[in-house]
Length: 503
Image 1 (cartoon, rainbow, N blue to C red):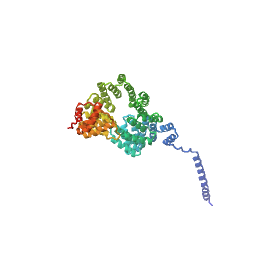
Image 2 (image 1 turned 180 degrees about the horizontal axis):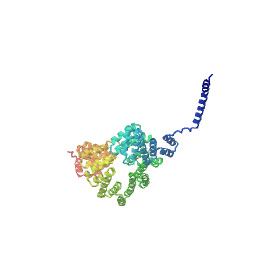
Image 3 (image 1 turned 60 degrees about the vertical axis):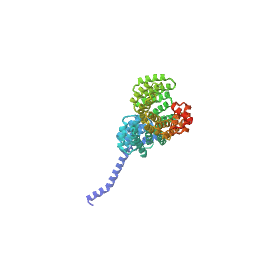
Image 4 (image 1 turned 120 degrees about the vertical axis):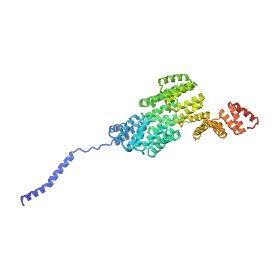
């Protein structure tokens, strides 16, 4: 074998050994390298903490990731909002909206707009539109847009958007938006049903509870609303909106002094919330008006005058002072305060209603009362008293057809059990010589509230118009017994009772 042949054999024999040694070295290097650390998803980590009952720990995890992770910011906003920490929720949603795109961005901006709307922030409108631009078919953009349309008075559009959000899987939040839209339109029966469905779907959510409590207060059931608001606050001590509604509920229950603490808490937690600050003033007004109920009207006027001088830009104070002056029968003083109140807050349904009341009942100027009552009914279409008062003013102003149209909106409701709307509807028909319609309406008014001298007198006239002597005598005599004053009616009644036919 030649020298080169031996070298070739040696090389071939040596190669596997070298390769083996190299693999061993590589394995040693692999063992020396530190293991790769998996990056934990902050949202998943937060969810685990929430499940374990550590909400504060979840917030800490999400807060650290917010600067770079839009998903974490969005989840932080939801968590903050569920605890009633609305200002902090706003900050988180803003951060999420800046980092996300598409449907997640639409959700972040939609949630942001809803919270801003609840807090009266001017940015709510722009963010609602931005949410729609990011995700036109999403549930949260539709929810946000529904709240904005309701705020703008576009109630039918608000209802349609809320229904779209429900269909898109918006859950309790969508149902709450639907309840809000229906309440704004004045359909409080349907609004209550929607809110109750929202509460059932998510018992921990604050917005549906506050919405339901509002409807209960508006329909005279403030006592039912109080415990649910207290429970909501126990679960979310930072729930500013719950404190605000609890304040209104306690005022409605005649416990203004008790309400002051809740109003102060709401104002302290929501430093930039003008509504919360005004609630503190409203409580002071309510306390002064309690003196009116106790027969101390002059003292109430004195206290409210000072409060007005200290807060000249408060529509609430001027409205309260006007109500005290109405109780004192000072029509001119009340009128001046109410005119200033509606100038300061044109959307105040109560101020517009009181203005109409002073013009119609105290000043005997029905024509001047009509515009104020119209604005009151438009601002709060679900308030039956506002519509009845508008109908009454229209009757006295000689606008009979408009009066009938307004009053039939009330009497056509299956829930209406009162007598006033039927009385004024009957009066309108009587003035238009529609005697049969007048009889039907006045009979229903007396069925709801008997012993009404005026209704009996008008009903007697309606039967006279129908030449129904029998019923004319029955109701004419009843009106006379109740003290109805109409010499012409009783002159004719005497003749018919004597046997003279109705001509």
